[in-house]
Length: 87
Image (spheres, helix red, strand yellow):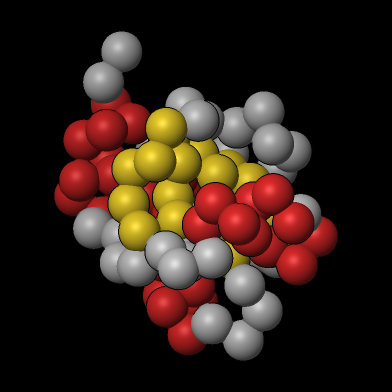
């Protein structure tokens, strides 16, 4: 996990799997967008949560915004920024 990752109370949560290159790409986008907006984010690996693995295994990486699925596989910085600027 990155040094700027904060607890799960964050608005943005990245769900990943170890060794996933798309997860690395998504992490970079989430980190950059959240840094630009001065917003924390959290990350969870599927390995530690069987229920999470059942729900998202085929979609990794997944970005949740306010607990709602925002993106899967690829994360668009503009769309994520737009979603986070909504009240």
